[in-house]
Image (cartoon, rainbow, N blue to C red):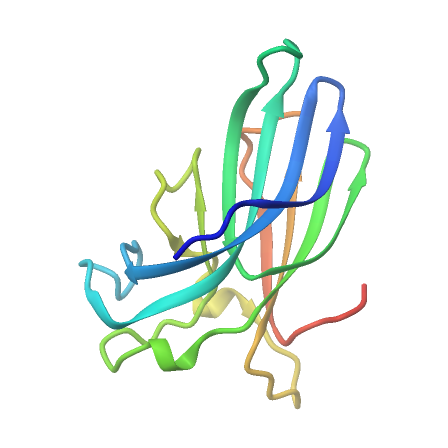
Length: 168
């Protein structure tokens, strides 16, 4: 089951508009790339998750806005801020540990990017690129992301930290 896209936040930069939104999605199969994800497998229990979506539009022609890029992140939107021509945002991800089997134990938050991953979900980081602050024993992830509104095709910068947040 998939619910409609719900806009949360909007940023404008010259002729570009960035819209944050979210929706809930059941993923009956996990078509993933990266270590441990060589094949698609049907899950006994469909994996359900909240996806935070970023859509960037070129509105030079106000009558016909053009969608330039869509990026989806597994997790819930916490907050965002635009500084100059960059947008920074924070997500909380709460892995559904029950959805994983012995064969698929990767709990790293997923993302897909219309410009980079070809529409396929991929882990947002590798295990050795996830930050951890001892002695915290959190079971969640915070993802910090920045992207350019000037050059929308540029690589996004992302950091994943074990933990969760409520205030920024």
